[in-house]
Image (cartoon, rainbow, N blue to C red; front, top):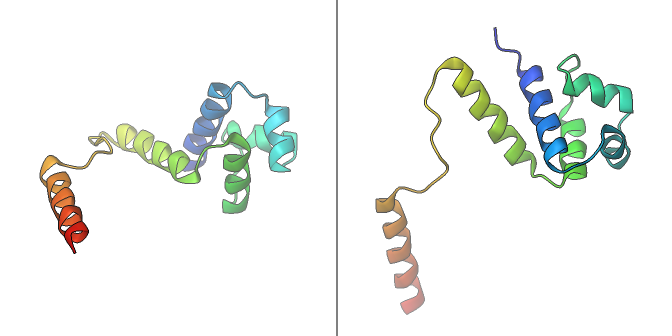
Length: 105
């Protein structure tokens, strides 16, 4: 069984470590109790959307990036194909055509 709180915790820990920040630093910047943030990272506690937003801000990472990473990890666990965040060539060409037409006006 997939526990979303565990995936969220792992993603938060990964971003914190990538940024070279301690648990204490992030907890302080996010105004979250150190012990609580530790439990969130270990998947023992559910974080509210407000807490997630505060931690994301403390990490200087958009919450959408955190949630996308969580979603990608869950997709892999479920055995689904993870698609890269790219615009297909035909849509990118269409977008450029529309923009050029708008600039001609």
